Image (cartoon, rainbow, N blue to C red):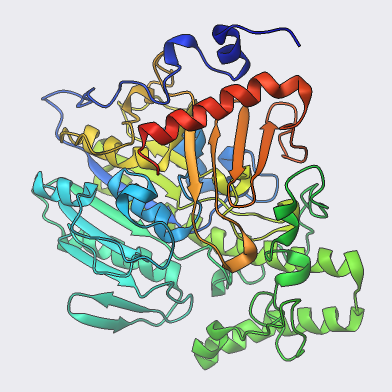
Length: 519
């Protein structure tokens, strides 16, 4: 292979010499759309584990999401938005602070968030915003920077949930997605200060495991087969050996009662587990009656079929994906309620509406459920924004963005100074649907948690075309050419034809670690 110049290296990795730095110099830019326009309200709708491949606007082939799609049609869809650490609490801390996990301190789900550090809600509150946090918090402390908060304890429950408040615990009868939206609408209607702009963070439990659908969607997808992902039976060849050690396979690690809603079989998964589905025990008699009327006939049919091998895996996939999508249908319905309220009250014209999720999720790709890996399905996060008159209607943003960018974006639109310690970049230069020449070329990722699902610590760098992953404890590396191999089935790290790219990507990873002060 002939030697390439640095300019040719950059071109090969989807970069330009002018933007070879990991990030552009956009942090000092100010967005505010003019003195005659008041500061915008911000409605930030956030879910848990919602994969882009199950959103209509992102091209879903398995479901429809008309209300999420409505935000995209009336605003901008960010096609290449990624998380900095694909797991719940760390991702939420990145969003709140605009900083990577090693800086904000929440490297895994077991760490308590330091609520004393600057967060965008606290900064907006100090700048005169009326602020509220309602729904899933998952950061092991009480929310700070909010005039009102009502949160689920830890993961929370789908049925008849308990919420924590500064006045104590409250118990509600019903389905958690509906109740979270009810509480959000109550605050908008009755509790916020109408003389101030507002920040409302409406954060849903769904569609987190164990994917228990609400009463309104139990029969959805009843008579259809959801298309299987082409990698459902991935054998993990041509990549690092660590992939084969995973414990998140639909085939081996889903439990019949807990995950698949088939109680009483006494069959353990490959790890010897047989957890019970606690949601059923929480239900009222009326809720159980409705649940049983749907699931009992399905389960009897399954037991009678006595499926084995790949047929059993395919049945597990159908049960899993349908319940997952039913949970999303409830989210989408409730987003419609919030959007309708904004329209009916005239608030829509001056409200930035944002839809996102803490990370993506595996919907059978590579045979998996869950997240954590730097592979696309859990690394990519949905991000859709609508702000009439400021965000180009129907825009599709191809620039690489990350969840550390949310905080500076919210501060920028509110005309609040972006602190130097924030590592993300305001997304406002992308609102017109065009990418500035000095936008970042690559994003850094680092997963720290070990133990659950046997996903090892790893870090990496991603450009528009390439992804480099380092499983640094084992010394394994992977490089994917996402243009030629979008399903990430063949690492080309050792391919002689890619050694210039390997060299450049390793250099980019080193630069990222220096920039972000990663030890």
